[in-house]
Amino acid sequence: MSRTSNSAASASLNQLTVNDTHSSAASAASKVSNGDFEKQIQQTETASATATPRWWESKSLEHKPLDGAYGWIVVASGCVMLMFSMGCVNSYGMYQTYYHLVQFPDEHVSTLSWVGTLQFGVMNVFGIPAGILCERVDTRLVSFVGGVIMAISLIIASFCDDAIWKLIITQGIVFSIGASLVFIPSTSIPAQWFTKRRALAVGIVVAGSGIGGLWLTPATRAMIDQLGTAWALRITGIIIFAVNSVASLFMRSRLRVQTRDKIVDFGVFRDMRFLLIFIGAVCATTGYFTPLFSLPSFAQQVVGKSNSFGTNLLTIINAASTVGRIGTGEVARLLGNINTMVMCTFVSSLSILVLWLPFQVGGTLIASAIVYGLFCGGFIGLLPVVMADLW
Image 1: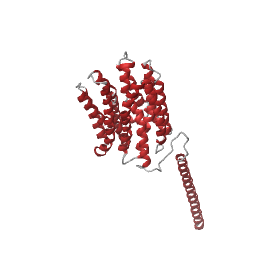
Image 2: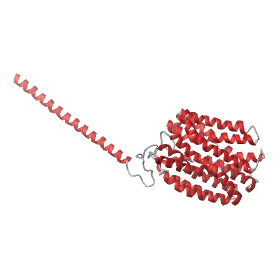
Image 3: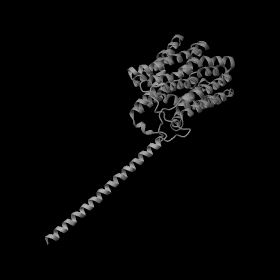
Image 4: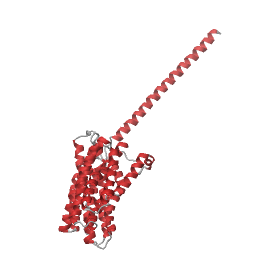
C-alpha cells in the first residue's frame, strides 16, 4: 500500500512539473510573440515617420540647428513677403483718397473703405484654411501660390476702374485670399527655427509690413500721380510676383506637422486662456487699420491739410511701426510676452482716443501717428509668440 501511494504521489508531482514546464514555455513564447509584435509596431511607426514625403508635402529639417543661420534666412524671406502683402494693405489709404476725390467722387467714403476692410478681414477669415494647407502642403508652395493670386488680383483690378464693386472683389477679396497664403507661413514658420530669439525673429518678420508701408505709400502716391491707379496696380502686381517667387523658395518649415483629424478644433474654446486671447484679438484687429485707412482723409477733409500731409502721416505710422515691431521683441524678453502685448494694445488705443479724436490740429495728428505706429505692431508681432508659448 505504501509503495502504491508513493508511486501515485510521484506521478502527480511529475505531472505538475510537466504542466508547469508547459505553462512556462507558453508564457515565454507569449512574451516573445508580444515583444516581436511591439517591435513590429515601432518599426512601422518609424517607417511611417521617416517615409519620404510626396512632392507637395513639407520635408522635415529637424537636423538643422535652432537659432542658426538658416533660421535668419527664413526670417528675411518672411519679412520681404510681408513687405508686399501687408505693405499693400497698409498703403491702401492712398488708393482710397484718390478713389474718393477723383475716380469715384459720388461714392460714399464708407463704400470705398470696404476694399481695405475686406483686405484685412478676409485675410483673417481665410487664415483658417491657409493654416490647414500649411499642415498638408509644402509651405514654399503655399506662399508661392499666394503671391501669384495677389499679383493676378491687382492686375485684374487695374482694368476695373468703372465700378467700385469690381474693386471690392479683386483688390479687396481676391487679394486678401492670396495675402493670407503668404501671411500664415511668414508669421508661423520663423518661430520653429528659434528658441532664444523667437520674439525678436517674429518681430523682424512682422516689421516687414511697416517697411513695406514706409516705402510703398510714397511710391504708390507717385505712381498714381504720374501714371494713374491702373498702372500703379499693374506695376505693384508685377513686383509682387517677382519678389515673392524668390522669397518663397526659402520659406521652409523645420518640423513636419502632423495633420489634424478636425478642420477646426472647437475644444480649445474650453480653455479660458485661449478664449480671452481670442476675444482680445477680435477686438484689437477690428480697429487696427482704422488710422491707416482714415487718417489721411481726416487730415485733408476735416483738418484742411494737403494731400502730401496725409501721405506723410501714413509714412510716419509705418516708420514708427517698423521700429516698434522690432523693439517690442526685445522689451518682451524683459516684461514677458503677454504683458508687453497688453501694454502695446492699451497704448495704441489711447493714441486714438486721446491724441486723435478730441483734437483737429496737425500737431496732435502727427503725435497720434507716432505713438500709434510705435505700439500697434506689438500686438501683431507678439500674438503668434504668445500662442506658441502657451500651446
